[in-house]
Structures are given as structure tokens and as C-alpha cells.
Length: 293
Ligand code: AMP
Ligand code: ZN
Ligand code: FE
Ligand code: FE
Image 1 (cartoon, rainbow, N blue to C red):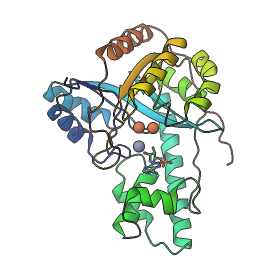
Image 2: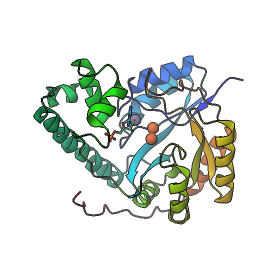
Image 3: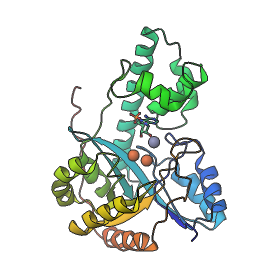
């Protein structure tokens, strides 16, 4: 059966390897009918992607992914169908991206102190949009300090490595509120991998109360058993099961673009919910004051 829908992908607007237009071209080659671009903390790739989608005959769903700090782990919150040009929404995204820059600089300083000579300037050249550790990893790879991106995380920049610096992140609830403030639909990403079902179960009642509408169920390499467990959880909390590959370009995640079957019902249900919200005045969102980490 052809895979026609992919609701989780990244481009050079964050840490993907292909530009938004290239990603859409590749999606068309893979036979996709519907594609969501869900870059980290950025909607800057959406205009280019939508334009290319128009010429390729693909439907582009505007999306985003916000990695949040849940204290006991992290929850990645996807958002779909936001009215993303709203200035209040963009201003929060800019704050998140600025925090990424400051944190990236500090991580490069720490690496330099440890005798690892990569430059911040080079990291900035590699990153075309929201800067993240994957860009630092590519600079380490290029300079010959590691043989793979995975090794860069394991040796230098992973959460427990000496050069690691945390970055300012929203709470899961705030990410839900931020997406809702632009009339978008918040969805929990890859629940089994991050944060893991045990941690997620603790968060679910509150997140659903705050306005979560979906649970990423048809994800990457999740097995039929895992998919069934997520379908049951989605049912229990009346969440829409969504799905996608989390494609970042070749060699980053194992699932190819469009490589996970996602039923068209996922898109239909998201669209029906988005249509309801478009008519409503969205609740305002105010960024909480930064906490010192
Ligand atoms: P950041 O948002 O800058 O903290 O970087 C986190 C991103 O790095 C995640 O969204 C993943 O895409 C990527 N990442 C995290 N851990 C690894 C790993 N071990 N190998 C490759 N990529 C990773
Ligand atoms: Zn990523
Ligand atoms: Fe994620
Ligand atoms: Fe992702």
C-alpha cells in the first residue's frame, strides 16, 4: 500500500538536512499526498514549503514541534494548523530561538575549554534556521572529532556530557497553550520514545485538560503492539491518533520520508477540529518569566 501521508518532518528551518522546497520535492517523489512540516520552534520554512507543495500538487499542513521541559523528562509537543503569522505567536518562537543561540554559544565555549576546536561561526553557517545540538554535532563531525552524529551526542553534547548546557524551554502545558493561542492543534509527539509511557501517563490528565487534541500513534519504527497501546491510550483520553516519520534527511532517523502508514482519518479529524477553532477567538498566551537553570 502506498504511504500517502506524513505529519512529522523537519527541514533546514531547524535541524533537517533538506530545504523546505527540497523536502516537498522528495515528498512528491515518494508519492505523498499530504505533508506536514514540523520544524523545531520555527514556522519559517512554511512559506517556501507551501509554494513548492502548490506546484507539486501536495497538500501542506502547517506544523511545528516544541520540545518542552516536563521536569521528570521531556514532552515534545507538535502543533498543526496554527494561524502562524500572528505576531504574538511569532514573538514567543523568536524568544525560544534566541535562547537556542545563547545556549549554543555557551556549548561551543565549553567545548573549546575542553580543547575541542570548533567555532561558533561554523555552527552558524551549518544552521540555516533554529540552531540545535545537531548543528554542533555536524561541526564536530566535519572537524574530525567524531565519526557520526550519534558519537557526537554520546561523547560531547549529550544530556550528561561535560559540554552540555540546558536551554530555556516551555513546560508541556505552556506549549499546549502557545499552540492553542494561534488556533492550532497540540499533539503529543512520539510518546513511547520521549517521554515514555510511564511519565506521559502522569502528565496526560493535565495536558488533556489544557487542550491537547492528539497523540502521535503511527510513528517511525513503532511496532504493531506499540501502535495498539497508543491507540488504546488515545481512545481513553479522546485524542486523535496521528503519525509520521520524523524525517530529518538521510541517515538521521531510520524511517524514510512517508515511510510510516498514516490513515487518512487522522488528517480528516485534525481538519474538522481545526475548522471549529478557526471560528473561535483563541485564548491569549503570555510567556512565563525565564527561570534560571
Ligand atoms: P536541542 O534541541 O538543541 O537540545 O537538540 C535536540 C535534538 O537533537 C533532538 O530534537 C534530536 O533531533 C537530536 N538528538 C538528540 N539526541 C540525539 C542523539 N543521540 N543522536 C542524534 N540526534 C539526537
Ligand atoms: Zn530534530
Ligand atoms: Fe521530537
Ligand atoms: Fe521531530
